Length: 212
Image (cartoon, rainbow, N blue to C red; front, side, top):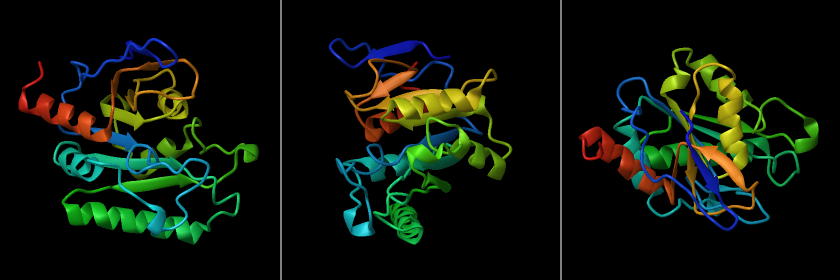
């Protein structure tokens, strides 16, 4: 399924269209990274409390649009600020509960939020690019079909998480959000969009039959 390669240092070869086989009918699941996709990333720091959280422009509208199309929307996020003592597990839970409520009030939904609180040195199985967060979602919803699932993220670890969760079976789709990154220079993706809003508009067009 993965056919586009994005070269972020220097030349760029991204695909701002939905693969033809993604019909977004019944049974589709979206796995969303959080920081840099749903909310604004804080360089060198973490969203420690709800007051630090800022939805990216258009992301709330995007979640409303996507909620009307896909069966599940699941956030999978690394939050090592807990391990570093920048925030507590309860602080993180409160941020996520308030985020879910805000999306609901806007007319959308988030069906689940799975977070890894561990530091890199802990070598856990849930910190992306490890597949553990997606594995937790699969345990909650065994009917999730990897072939009808898409990972939407802004880092190499997000794309690698989708690959690692897929193994040798059906591949979870990979959608890159953002124009450039400090990550490795070549990342295999299925599509790339400047924002979650742009991705949601492309999905809506596909469902409406605007995009062939």
